[in-house]
Length: 437
Ligand SMILES: *Cc1c(COP(=O)(O)O)cnc(C)c1O
Image (tube, rainbow, N blue to C red; front, side, top):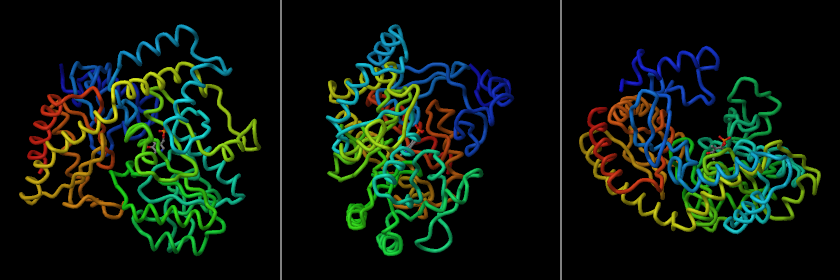
């Protein structure tokens, strides 16, 4: 074993090699550890709630591949389903039984999807849902919220423009201004901003995209009144409400956020958990909307590997385990047990003058440094908290606990964890909180 962050480690050598052939050495930017410093451990294996790096260090994993691994790593039922499917052929580019079975399961569990289309990622799901919403309404503009993430499609890589109720500016190089100008970006938790937007642009707004519980910029549970107002205004102005459940879908419960909260979306997007750890995204809605998609209707959307039997088998296996083993209520209980351990630690920090807030719902949690009150909008997150997060992150990693290498990413519990794992993690959190003050 050697420290994976020292230059002499196997991970560091692999990272140097990776950097010669991949931008930043990674396939997705946050993995490069830029916001916490140091270089990333390269993971060699995972089992249950633990992962092992190339240097032989073990970590208790709260990342869980950023959400998909709700059962933990290499769950036997998923591994077996994938092995059996792989032996029969990984992809045919033709309809297959597993695809219909997963679609039936999604339609059964989702309160929104009467029909579903499978894609390969959450990004594709939101891009396609936007195209469908534009087609269905004959409008080009749409709205997203500051602090929500909907993948890296051009129209979503947009930040608020100058002035209230104006369309936005691109937040990534390479996104044409002409594309960004159809995206309106509003603050979360703000009824007045919603009203101002619809007063000015209601008639040109195809859709509003929202995460039922925003979980990509910290964890920002919204007030029910705000969510209700959003539903009311979209309906009044003929705009579709698209609830992006890529994180919350099949995690908060069988029906995701919309099912649990009885929130009425027009379209819903899924990803992460739905693929059981393999790349799957999906979007769904009422039949009359979904039947606008090709070949039934004129909205083109396709995929060489979409709905392949390998990924469908993994998704089906994961959802079956969750259903069969009462997974969602067990995860809810595990979440409460975790909060019971974290809450006193957070209170101790606050009392000592090092404020930190805890936000938690079911198996998702987030610590926000620099404030005692859990924020509900991006603007309410203290930017200075990221500095302490760096220290906290490394203090935890040294103690064998892996959380996301960014202050703005949430943690996920998995069904592979038990109360002993939580005790072990809580001891590490307690020590790392104290050390990082
Ligand atoms: C992760 C995520 C996406 C993007 O999904 P990818 O599979 O990474 O493309 C979209 N929306 C939300 C809410 C997400 O959390």
